[in-house]
Length: 121
Image (cartoon, rainbow, N blue to C red):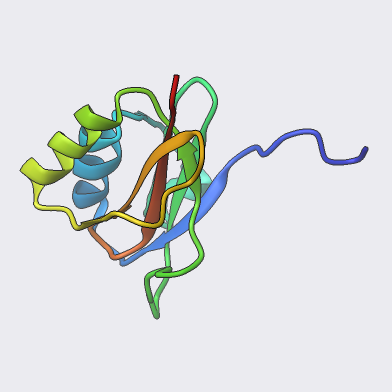
């Protein structure tokens, strides 16, 4: 096997919207913001991580949100995330049930679709 892990996922965002990214990715999803290397920091965007996930948000000049393609994050405390998303005014959508999981789609402040999946006991 050649591929053994995913280093990070890259999502696009509009220029100058890093604070909105922080409110969602650090505030709602509770990821930790990472300092970008200086050469990459000049481009804008933001990086976030947890113990097993790295999310890079890069500035795209002609930005269009990913409304179908999406990352799916395994989470703990989906209800807590849903509550923070509701409080922040983020759009959430219930989808067809997936056996063994409670899940939702939530849209980041830029309209990118994110799937959140919590394994049922």
